[in-house]
Length: 123
Image (tube, rainbow, N blue to C red; front, side, top):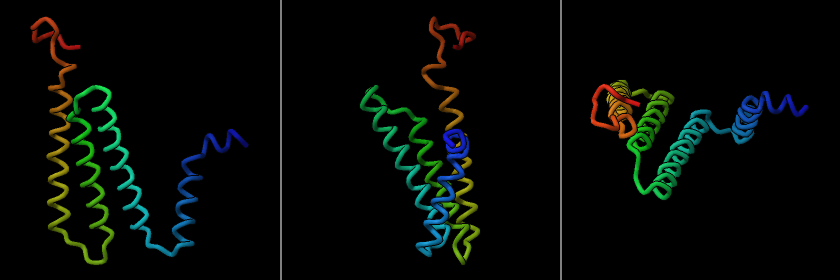
């Protein structure tokens, strides 16, 4: 029984959330919206904890928060009865730009800079 819960805990959690939404008679998009907002809050707390611990803010956390928040907004827009296609396309464009920033932040990260000034040497 313990192995079952260990192996299928994600299915069990999703089922509980789904049943709670059915019992509460709330639309499904509200559950998705709340879960995505929860993920944004987790990322914000991680960023603050990292700042307290290391005394610096990593650009990766900030960009991740924006990407998750914009993805949440796209999902909300798609699940609305009247879909605003222009707004969705704009949000997708902004998400794409943030993904480019995310890749640039990884590429130009201080941990990727060479130690002895040799530009060919990257850890």
